[in-house]
Image (cartoon, rainbow, N blue to C red; front, side, top):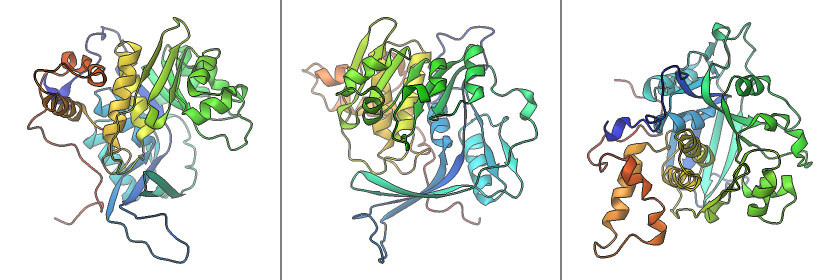
Length: 364
């Protein structure tokens, strides 16, 4: 095994296991990201950005983050048969090794697009797209496929049948949810939560859903409806509670200068799923999730900013080199000492991953 082909699940794989580690479905967007803006766009004026990138977005953010951490990832999505859709399909299938056998190219349907503008550590987005027409039948008649796990975005007031099907087939369901535009913040309005292994809302969402006065209290309250609750707290890190064992864990955030925060939550989820499927302690799962999210926000774009094991290894090598030899690792760095047993090399001399680019391609 080398640093560029780490299989984090090697120790738990067995004959007869599903060939798919993670299944997910959703909408793929073409993301166009502007960075280096001094402020939010002002009505009636023209703003110039110092940086720009294009990459697959939407559910592709999560799929790419999972695949780059070595999980065998299957994505079911519709792709437009335009140049945008062709670029996204090629990038995900050929560039990232994501299984698209359950995806489809839709004739005459244009790809959804999101323009994201990053400034002051925040972002503003404008999106355009139309619902893809439903297929006459699911590809090969099996959707979802047998999988160790699935990642889902729960929808208030709506049951997604595939989530229950996957859970009954033995898949672990990891879920987040979007902002409740109705303002009800009722956990009972998330019917698929009953099928979930883990629920990962942010602090604002968790406190509203539970009426708790702190993110930590909210995490404990959520274990009444889901086995494992993880609440992300931005610059304060993340807190998790396993309701079955009573185990808790809290890991502080790694502070970095963000270039583009698009997809950071997806990368966090991917790190947590990876550690969970590998059977790691709860605190190690949180640590990997926070680290990968921190590395991702230093690059353009949601999907192609996701780090792989080479980048994780490079970060670990750098922080150790900056620590004096006659001093033990500081308390904060000791939290990541588990990486030493996982990473077989130092991460030097490897080819960098594909990143978001200003344009979709040049003529040869």
